[in-house]
Every structure is written in structure tokens, then in C-alpha cells.
Length: 103
Image (spheres, rainbow, N blue to C red):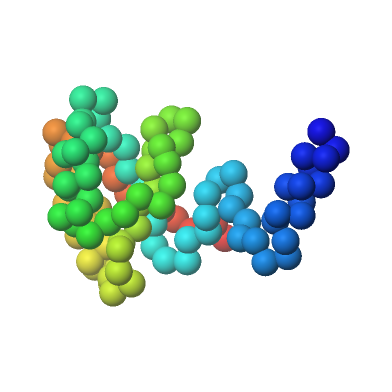
């Protein structure tokens, strides 16, 4: 075990990227969303592609996904529109809301 630990520490090096157990940090806005149990993966993928969203974390233990715009060019109004468009897809989305940043 000690040999394995030494090998792993040596392999990491000083410049190895670190990802926490909660996922990578996100600098921009994040939308939290849950999908209906019957939602097919392909339908969810197509919806996210249509809305230019990517999954940045999830699903959590309670099924919450964290989504972010694929591009950085989104205003507060366009983010609100994205949330409304997600919520309008009742056949796929249970609930979506803009994540409130921690103080």
C-alpha cells in the first residue's frame, strides 16, 4: 500500500489539476434542474443542445443537475428565458431555476 501511495503521489506532481468531490468550480451562472423520471437521455441531450446548455455537475443524490450556458454571452434576461424554456418542457423537466450564488 505504501508503494502504491508513493507512486500515486509521484504521478500527481505539483501541476496536476485538482477536482473536488463536488465537481469543478464554475465561474458563470448556473441553472439547477431536475428532470422527470420518464425523461429519456437522448431527449434531455437534445433539449440541452437546443438551448446551448451543458451539464457541469450532477445528478446529485436527489437528482439535481447543474447546467451552464455553453457560451459566456448571456445576460440576466437571457438566463431567465433559458429557465423559462426549460420549465416549459414539462414532459422532460420537473423544475429549473437559476442558482443563487453563495454569499
